[in-house]
Image (cartoon, rainbow over all chains, first blue to last red; front, top):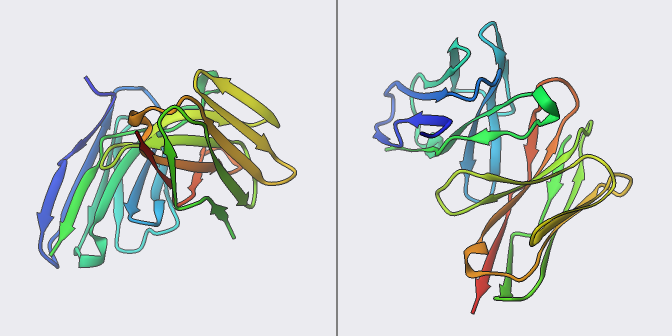
Length: 114
Length: 111
């Protein structure tokens, strides 16, 4: 089973709809992140969290909100989706334990806003 | 501000060697990652450098010069499956392990 899972994997929605993307992990990591990826722009950080009581905005948080329901779950919401939020969204986790700080990525959610 | 530059595209021949460069200017530095990403898939970890010098891991090596704000990824004995995007990412200072990514280099390996 995958260590970091994302649901749904693909979603097509209409402008103005509320959308939630979910991320779960079994790695036991405390740090979780949401990124979006657009062609030619690389990965950009939307929100990140150290634990359930800690939520921080990344470089492009406008139009998004998050919820850390448990250590293993981190959800990203688009309250009112717009076409320029069409992108590939990745959840990632990391841990400081053992000195390894690389981020482990989920498989991604391809979101299309019409 | 934060800035990471890497070439947009590169091409190479199967069996050859290719070097992908990355230069960075960031407010804080706690290491540099290279990730590989096949189209539509998740990035996967290749290497991490925090000290100056060369780290070798099989066909892949990564080099860092902190004073120059420069890194490269060296891929040897190229295979067709190495066709992918290669992402350079700097770890910012602080306890969150925040990454700033370059736009990625798309490598095409030809027979």
